[in-house]
Length: 354
Image (cartoon, rainbow, N blue to C red):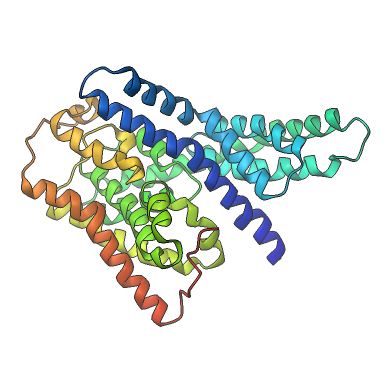
């Protein structure tokens, strides 16, 4: 059982997270950089950044990168690995908000099917890709749309949470969206589909930041500055293989989100009035923070439709942004992690990124 858990969850999920980082996340960072630089004036170099980022963020590109990462981690032969490009693209596009999870499941199944026949015949160059792609398409048709619907079902829970008082709403949305961010599910796609803006969007940003900043800072002992950058500006999904091995490492950043969510909604009244997709991005490329800042000055159409207006932020607003997104998640996550280390729930090496 341990062998299968390591192969299908720890190794495969680690490869998927690296593929996601090498496509969607780095693409988002590059695109956001280009978009912000273009505010200074038109420039071919800045436009190039935006175009490059857009290409890297395409759903089929992201799916292909994740599937190849999974296949590589599973030791797939070259023909299986190359064919997984198409399988991953199909699964991610068909899976919608559940695309990453669909890619994980379908790429693993397709890889195993391909490996069953790889190098077993004299016409391997035909048989292996044929079996791999046929299995991939079959499993995509069978599972992908249902995985996508399951991911969007979280949207119903999120929308219900928006009807609650700001305190409870802040807790629930912060925790739920933060967890979605770390799971192999697209929190950004869910937030975009729900048009999550306003206070609810602010709570979502708080939860995402708690996960990303929390894991980045509390794992500094194991991962140093590379871990700060890859998790703090990339994705906390990199920790999923470690979460599978020891789920208790997920407690500190999740508890931090329980605290920072209502602080965002009740104390600082932090609103995400930029693009709704930014609500589910956290500190990835600082997209969440840029969304809040641009929402102050130029609210998105979705936010305006819900009554948002342009405002001139004061010191209190900037302080809230810094505390909720960076300072408090770091402090609380390290504090809770220290407690769990003392009682033996978290041990040295549990947070190490392979």
